[in-house]
Image (cartoon, helix red, strand yellow):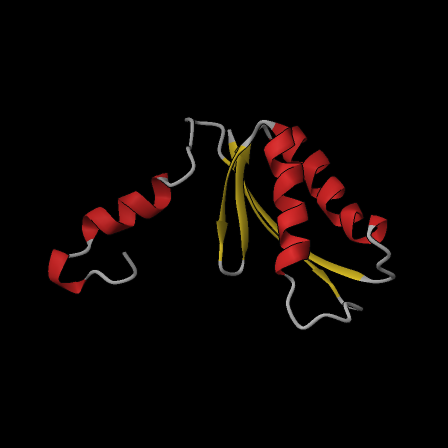
Length: 106
């Protein structure tokens, strides 16, 4: 499995908030069957790398299907082949190494 972090931003949105647009992206992700987690600056998705690349294109094209003329997408993929990596595993590993009194963001 690979992990993809993606943010899709319509640059010509007339609205001050993009929450409705992001909700549409989340529907596409839900239909994909992949595990995913929304966070403040984007979404992290778990799945096979070829599927993640296809999904990134679908998410990117969604903006145009909603009438957008310009979209900016940022994607990062961590494709580890020596062992399976699951959504949330990296965060849990770091949190386990931080002293309980110094943890924040939980």
